[in-house]
Amino acid sequence: MGNRSENLILAQKLIGQFAGTIIQESKIYETSAWGATNQQSFYNQVLVLETELNASDLMSKFLEIEAYMGRTRIKKWEPRIMDIDILFFNDEVIQTPDLSIPHPLSQERRFVLVPLSELIPDFVHPVFNKTMNQLLEECSDAGNVTEVVSADEF
Image 1 (cartoon, rainbow, N blue to C red):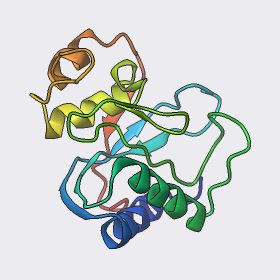
Image 2: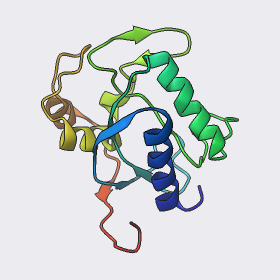
Image 3: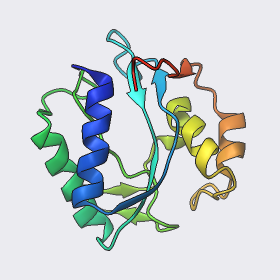
Image 4: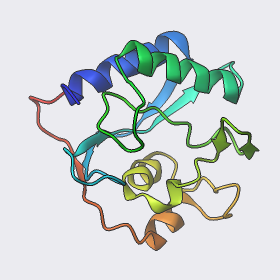
């Protein structure tokens, strides 16, 4: 929702300020909505972050950033200003009532796998024991994932 470019820029700034140091960032991709598909396409990006926070505290920071940006959570897969997920936390597998790492649907989403393959193609998923490139090759998601290249956007 809103100005997708400005939202991504602000989210990056806030993540860098409050959650850790961004050491890599993927290209920006415009992607088909996933889940509830009757909405505007999304902008997606993957960041590699170096942080001193544990996974739970990092997720708390991300939720605070989303709330600061105006995100409300009423209905699953609704349009939103920002959605920040932890896809991986090193090679840890974490399952709590509030947090699942690796993200449980990352291997099913091209909009996640394309930027992951760009940044960390040989990273091995700690549950499926496959690289990001392998998961992307096997992914059955047919959603559109297009690099945003317009100078007007960024």
